[in-house]
Image (tube, rainbow, N blue to C red; front, side):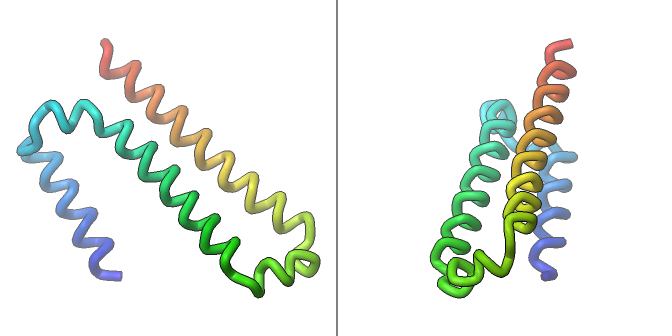
Length: 92
């Protein structure tokens, strides 16, 4: 778990010191979206490969599936809205 905190602190340090070229910083939003899509794909792949989860779909129920789908959709929506707001702020 410590590597998560180190990664976050390293990212903050790099962001504060502005050591990345503007070319990379300009495409940061696209990188974030692609990373989230890749993360969701890998999570879906892991769920699909897990035979126990597939077998127990009936036990999990429709409510659990709806809850999971809604969490994913709202997460995507929030990220989209926040990146849109950030882009509008950058244009001003």
